[in-house]
Image (cartoon, rainbow, N blue to C red):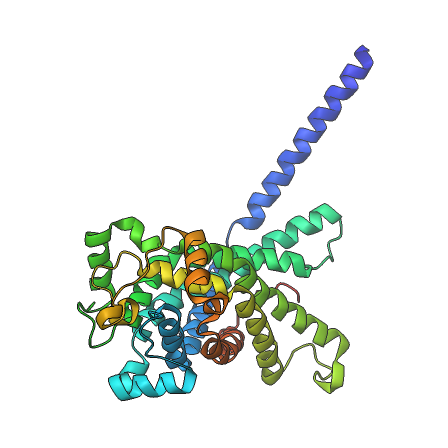
Length: 355
């Protein structure tokens, strides 16, 4: 028994020493070098540029989508994509097509930067753990693991910039007839804090978090998986003998990924926007309606918003604005991905996960 106890003690000591050595090596490996810091900064810049360029390109469709999502069902002003854009042009002019775009860019640049950066870092961490678990140093991320990395990145980025998104939603639906005008992002933030409290800045946060999983997760997972499949199989001559995809092929991959993600998560986006309008004392007329029909539904939470939307407007109301969003999201996501990789290549960032 004593001999067995000694052996057990020696084994335990060896295990502790081994773990300590591994922890020491791990600390050395994760200590960022100056080159790593520069690489991370370049990745953040690439993500920020990608987000700003893509959203600006589709700003009119983005505004129309939000207007369709929140407009009072008893006072329809925007009815369809083409007619809706014409109505904005006729009543508000060229500037009306881009209302809220400044706030959107101020939000989307840090959001995109954090999202892309978080995805690459989360992928590295998940890949390391996966390789340690399987004992295969050559193992690569599976689509499911990519989904997890994408979802983590989306939640982190969305939560960090959500107050800006909430403010952007309200500024976007303002028209010249709105009873009270937010003069900009800072004025809107201070007004909401004063009149509704700090919790108001996170109205609609829960459906946003839930929607991140299919939307951002599928975007990244499908895009990366498509790229990997095209490089390996080279179907229809879309890829030459090199291991890099062309810009057009990457654009197509981003379009497919964006379409799939936005379709699955769209009802949650409608619910989020409607929840953001709750408690707005001087809400825009697009939300409250005009004349005798001037009234807007009050929602007490995500489930209540779903229930009342379907009850009073039908199931199809959960997809209001889907057409301009579909037209918008394909070029938006595709341009974001391609711009990110182009800027990354231009800056000399070498932090790919699957290479």
